[in-house]
Image 1 (tube, chains in turn cyan, orange):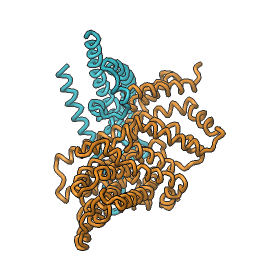
Image 2 (cartoon, chains in turn blue, yellow):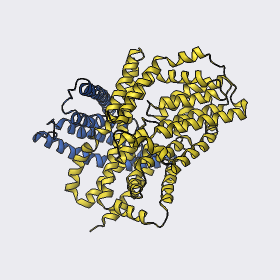
Image 3 (tube, chains in turn blue, cyan):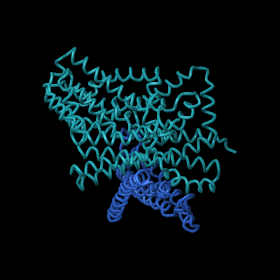
Image 4 (cartoon, rainbow over the protein chains, first blue to last red):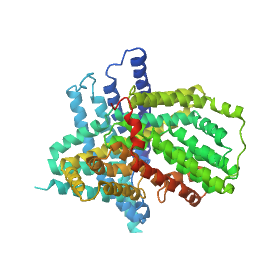
Length: 165
Length: 439
């Protein structure tokens, strides 16, 4: 468990950094596009679709990191007032719901990405390949599922320990 | 056969229960939305949706405006633009009654025009302005109140993360929405300045006068690298959006690049600040994107089940003035503000309120400004009062209770601002209607 923890945390950090770098590169890309269009009258072909395809990797690769660091927006006013066992119970329920939902998302978005690769799916005007962008969804979601599963196991452990005490 | 309307109702109940239990809003809305669609359409079609929607919902060119504006603020802070703007405001008005507090609100207002995050502003300005005011013998409550209330303006003055999220969730055009924030934003800064002036005139003990700065020094305070950069970036970004030359995404990209270049040229960017700034940008953006994706999935359930239509027709047919419905909605925001942060409030309400407000014939830009005003109030009032806690973290010499008490006069002035906007919508709508794009 300890090793898995460290490996997962490491992978999350690296992917999160990748996500930040993608956003940073997009900044240069959009600036370059504007400069080319207005100063040199040579617009970069397909920049709209290329920019669009970059968003999914930026979002989904960092998904698990944000969950691990408790960065998601929610309401904690009741949660913080529950006794410890109640908190664990509630966490177990919400983690399970999220786990089921993201397992479904990971599986079917994986199929969608696979289809895009098989069929050579491209964007409508610039004919850019889409599979690599679609692939980010199952990869990020699967990693999130792993993170949720580990948090669920820890919560259930804590719950079991608390009940016995 | 299950009644689709009941499925939607059940879904809404599930969302409320799970959110109250503390589950992240993004996960709740995605899970419930998907679950509801499975019930309504069967597993096959819903599974296809689950496979495609997460990608298609985030793959939007418009969405990219958000990380760009967050980056812009982060690089601008590294470049020291905050400090230059504040020093300039201080040199010009610091000697007036309450002058340092007035300088703080105006420094914050100017700074807000290139920064998107209100809480970050509260931290930065708090660390800079509060110790200075306290050193001059300013009342702790006035010092803290002016920073906390001033930083809330950042949510109104573009670029504003809150406003962009409103635009994305209601699928309204981002450019006019951003431009609309200027007049109400600077009107607020103006009324705050008047309030501080009057308070300091009536009770000079609140704010002992600071030294008058010589004209030469005042002039020198204007010609600082940070101010030049501010001016150039400001006009490139908002001039571009206003004239319709740039899309908001392009403007954001250029603005981020401009502040990045400024920080780099002034030698104020090192590997550490760059990395921290980018990671922070990534974290906030991802958090917001994933909420938007989740909420849009849930909105599909509401729309597909016919709930949106039925609820809208019902509310619109109520035999009361549309103004009461609007005021009711605004009160809901004030109540929700006690439990949720800005993004969470909008995520849970706008899929339902948005269509109703539009059907009632109110302008969506104007409603957006009012929602932001409610959020501003939520940012500085207990129990959540995010700005207050951020400020408290940044300036340990002032207590939470002192900050909250310092905010009270600003709150009254804020309510006057809200009333003016409600009575005179043209305060909000005039500027965006003169834009190049909207014609």
